[in-house]
Image (cartoon, rainbow, N blue to C red; front, side):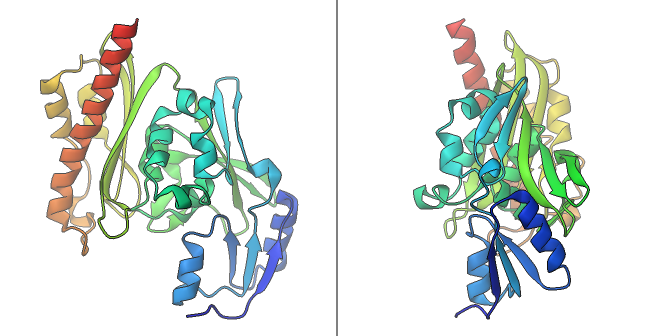
Length: 296
């Protein structure tokens, strides 16, 4: 199926993209980043924009840099470019590992970090990792830039705190150079998307957890923090018993009546998977904490 006729614009600057959004505010308008979600939706008829604004070539929205204690990721940074950046692995280990699980090589060579987060597909790999990484989403709009804490960014399926006249320009992640991160997911055999994915970021001192942030995707209609797991880990020394106890609290505080229930997995099975993959993510972090301790 071919998409309907539309007007196509290529923005070369953030300001030009915002002007185009304002000019076509009354039309059905979509922003084109990597296109891996939007273009299939257009071909299938699920999306039929009147106006398409291509923001993929806006140079300041590409790249990875470290500014003080913050890792800055341009929203149009491709997954593969992030994975090639040593600074991303050093300062954002949980987010970077989740990116490595996205799609395949072809997808990672074209898809963008910002496009993933702005699209807010609950089955994508990055919402939970962004939550675990305590990211800040920086949006540009008519009144300048606005910083949105990740805990306030995801509203529901394909719904975020971005206003219609805004675009996501970068993601800021506080440096986690002294922390250990991991990601574990049950991938859909048909699509590779996460049936359930769990991201963990632990700050430890000699094997004792000083702070923990655990995020999950594929569970509800938006990425969520697993606060019961975080509470269980606070101040403890990681071992098999503690990991079991923490994973057992994975669904604590979640409204189990709202767990996703679809052809991939029932709500009941998802709750079980959430505990299993929380345990696996924590086991990964525990192994890496042990490796770091041995190296010291």
